[in-house]
Structures are given as structure tokens and as C-alpha cells.
Image 1 (spheres, rainbow, N blue to C red):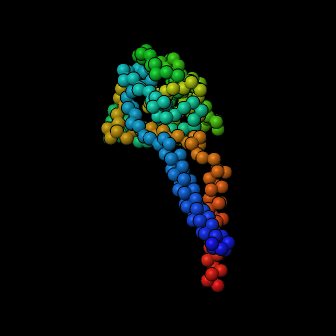
Image 2 (image 1 turned 45 degrees about the horizontal axis):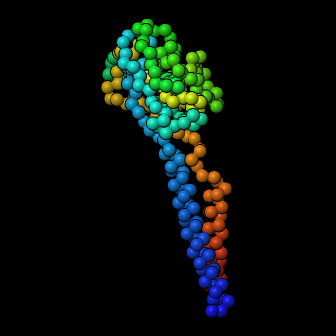
Image 3 (image 1 turned 30 degrees about the vertical axis):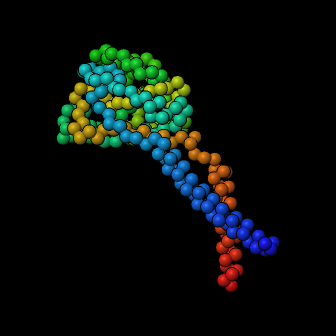
Length: 229
């Protein structure tokens, strides 16, 4: 076999490999972007009559979400968002209220309610932990006792970093009396979306694969162009 033919075979093999590499790299980038965006994007209904603070009237206990079960770890950044609304006065035809708050906790313990509203405190959550707001709290968003608002009259959404040792998060309607809260259409919910970037591949590696494929594909294009002209 002549050196010319041997070089031609090697070049064709290189070009095929580069095209496959480019397609694979593109698919990997797309896959990782989708996987990263969908690492956690879930919505959960919240019972507006349940509470993790003491209130004037009897109310069911809020059930905490296990961060481990959700695949969320200490240090992860998550976005919490409120969906829907409820009636704070027992009128299912007038569901307009949507305030929601939360607190992180090292465990799932929730002490009994005192039967009196003592303010928005974490007295019932003995292992409450302060959330980390890397960009600071909005005005009136963070209380002085580890409770923070996910939504209130002037905003909806909270981006927080999960504090060290946090294993659970309590989420509930922000109110002082819960027994008369009604959500007939069951649309009052919280969205939990992981926006951490730990699972995204190193950009230099993926860029290198793409650059290699594009470079070799370009060479093949120029070669074919020379044949035409």
C-alpha cells in the first residue's frame, strides 16, 4: 500500500472519529444540562390548615420534608416557590391568600402546640437552623428565629443554601390561626428546585471535546470544497 493511500485511510478514520466525537460531546452537553436542570424540580401540596408554630386553634402538625429523600445535601442551593392560594377565613369561594414560610431543622421533631399564638417562633421545632441567604434577605423575609418566608404579599420565591446539619425542612402556610384555612381546589403547593451546579461537568473537558470535533469536521469540509472547485 502506498504512503498516499495509507495517509488517506488514516485521515478518513480521523475525520469519522472526530464527527462521532463532536456529536457525542454535543449530546453529553445537552444531557448534562437537562440532568442538571432536572436534578430536582418537584412540587408538593401544602395543607394550609397544618402548622409548625403554636396557634389559637387546633391544627394538624406540619409534616417535614426529608432533605435526604429529596436528594438534597448540606451546602446545596435550592429555590423554593409557592404555587396556588387558600382562603384564610374558611370561604372556599375566596381563595386569595398565599403567604408561606419555612424553617430548616436538624431532625424531624415537632413539639405539641401550646394552644396559644405566641408569634412566629420555632418553639415547637427544637432543632431549627438558620437558612443561608447568600444574596441576603429581602425586607421582611427573614425572621429572627430561623423562620423565613417563601412568599409574602410583595414577593414569591426564596433562594437559599441548605445549612450544615440540616436534614429536614418544615413548610407551611404563614398565619396565626390555621383551623379555618381552606384550599378546596388543592392548588396550594411548594416547588422545590435544586439549582446547585455540582453535577455539571467541567466546562474545559466538554469544550475540548466540542473543539476537537468542530476542528476536524472543518478540515473535512475544506477538503471536500477543494474537490468541488
